[in-house]
Length: 110
Image (tube, rainbow, N blue to C red; front, side, top):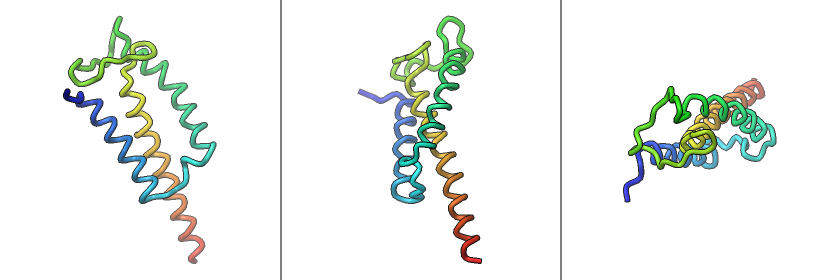
């Protein structure tokens, strides 16, 4: 069985971002309630917007059926979009925190 392209890239993105956090940057965001709250807020906006963009009754964004699993929830949102969103938002927050930590360490060295 072949894994659809968007599905494979989404899983790869999630794995790489998590490994980057755990093995390289080590910002500690996964232990912070603020990170999970930010993710919940983003998800609260992602669902209605993504649902509107991908609704099967009048889609604005189209997915080739061979590139996704075909599981859509809720409001016709391909489940891959949630993994992609997680990876994208986590990478952004992680990078921001890493740069903040580094700037703080630079300030301490002065």
